[in-house]
Each structure stands twice: as structure tokens, then as C-alpha cells.
Amino acid sequence: MKAQQRHQLKQNEFAATVARVTTGVVENRDRIVGATIAGIVLIAIAGGLFYWSRHKNDKASAMYGVAVTIQEAPIVPPPTVPGAKQAPGTYPTAQARQEAALQAFQQAAAAYPSAPDGLASAYQAAGVLVGLGRLAEAEKTYADVIARAGSSPYGVFARMGLAETLVAEGQYDRAVKEYTDLSAQRDGPLPVDGVLMQLARTYVKAGKTSEARAAFKRVVDEFPESAFVSEARQQITQLG
Image (cartoon, rainbow, N blue to C red; front, side):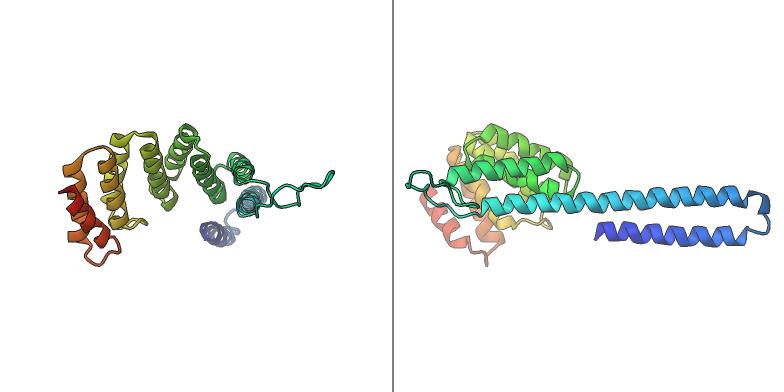
């Protein structure tokens, strides 16, 4: 959609330029040839940039699609018949499939870092790294996505992924900060009640009972229709 909007803007700018040039033809006969050449050059540059952007996004999308296909490929035990090979498009173990998907996502992210699907590839790569237990690498990858995506949905999702990675690493204070910041984004793409539950669970793991109780209570008080209310109440009772 953004690419189409940029293309429409270029078309509008071109139409306005044509009108201005037409109006000034009589008054600027001696300079019209040079102005026309300059206009043609500018239009060619604009068209080339638009084509390259579209081409880049298409290539990034294709690479992202390949990586997703690998991630969802079936797991088939290796053949036991001598000389037989693994069936194409299958993997002998879940780890082998994850490693292949990670490589594909990382290649797409590296090749097209500024394209939307390049950013999506980096985000997915971080999740695969978590699944493989390579938490330090996952943390770094999530941080890179956050730095590039900002407050966009991918930036917010990456912050959630980073918080979960920090919990897995035992870095509870840093995770609490991420969850607390995310819980304040009432209009964001994440459900606040779910973020508060993660915050409360992190407090429990950190041994901070009173803070955990307060977070669970917020779910009960602020989101009475939430699917998490029953669990939150049970946790409050258990924490005493």
C-alpha cells in the first residue's frame, strides 16, 4: 500500500510539472529544450527508483516464503534402505528443520534488510534462535528488529519476544521493564491483559510476590472479561 501511495504521489507531481511547463512554454521558448531534457531525466530516475523498490520487495517476499515453507516442512525419519536419500522438502528431525529455516530467514534478512519481508525474516529468525536455545543470538536479533522497526507492529512484537528471551536467560529485571512498558500501550497490537499475565509470571519467577500479586490483580480488576481472569485469581490465592 505504501509503495502504491508513493507511486500515486509521483504521478501527481508529474501532472503538476506538465501543467507548469505547458503554461510557461510561450514565455520561455529559448529554455524549453533544456527544461524538457531535465524533466525527462528526473522522470526516468523516479521511475527507476519505483521499479527497484517494487523488485526488491518482490524478491524479499519470495525469500521469506521459502523460509516459511521450510519451517512448516514435514519431518520424515531418514530412510534405512542403503543408498536411499531424504525425500525432498522433508527433514529427518525438528532441529534439522529449524536450522534450515534459520539459515533461510537470515539470508532473506541480510539480503533485504529494509524491505518489510526482510524485517519479518529477522523477526522470525529470532524466534527460531529461541527454539534452538541460542538465547544470546536471539536477544541480539530481536534488538536489531526493534531498532529498525521502532513503534510499528514488528517492533512491538519483537519487544515481546525480547522480554520472553530475557526471562529464559534469567534476566528478570530487564524483562520486567519490557513487559511494564508494553502493558502501558493500550492502543498497541498486543492484548494488555496477556502482557500483564507475562509480567506477573515473571515477577513470580523473580521471587517478587507482592509485585506479582499486584499484576495479577490488575488483570482481574481492569479486564473482568479476560480469558486470563480465572488463572489470575488462582494465582492471587496461591500467593496469599
